[in-house]
Image (cartoon, rainbow, N blue to C red; front, side, top):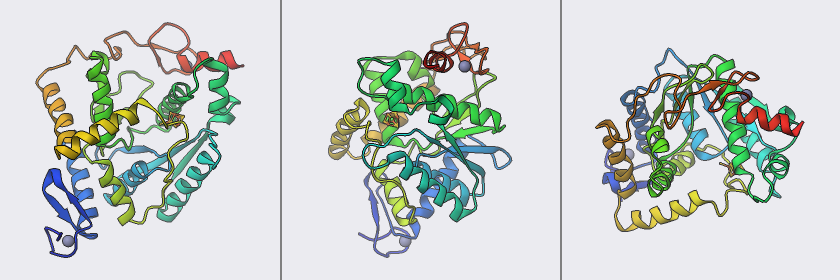
Length: 312
Ligand code: Q46
Ligand code: ZN
Ligand code: ZN
């Protein structure tokens, strides 16, 4: 297979685009496409300050690398969760994020969640969610809270995450199976700040397949953590991804058209409701947490502050 642009040996063939590219033209194409998506969905400008949430994985580090190449003002934030999994998952991924930032002279903010709360995520989960084996619910709550807080305190204009098409299609599939209108309403490449304690959230990689991001990281020589978080195993998201991959094998482009047709339907008004400031996912009122100043759907402390209070 030859590169469409220069006839050299192609490193990747993207069947859904009928496009094969070489080691030189593939990363160039990814960077150009990202810039196109940033503009198309009005994510941010070169004048704004971007905070990239990095986990040490291929997607978030590739995103940071792309934004750096495009000349955006983008700092990174890494949350140490204290997850070991027998191979030092958190410790290893933190080292990789630090090395990435140092090599490029970029600023990385590291937040030590166990230091903040007094417990690691698995310890916290053991105390707060009795009976459930996975710490993911607590972990998600902690990560969301910390990212919102760091973005707000650091006066960033926007928080960028490395979600790729496979992530977005799997979430969309799950939300469609249950017709979760609130989530379907909110799922978008750009989520406006709905509360004074939040900043805009964007997903510049939402139209790239996971295999494209893996190829990008490889071609660019980005060192990332290959292992998934040990708690990700057996998750519903992974199950949906497997199903969608089966579909994709038989019908190349199925994942992309599933996601893009959803975005188009939303543009035409599907899942719409009045988006007024102060209203949350399902249109519910958002209050302000008296402790952290963040948003909460019930009056009083937010879920994060309630959890920390309980632990103390
Ligand atoms: S939620 Fe669960 Fe992830 Fe947290 S505990 Fe690991 S798998 S890192 S996306
Ligand atoms: Zn080429
Ligand atoms: Zn709070």
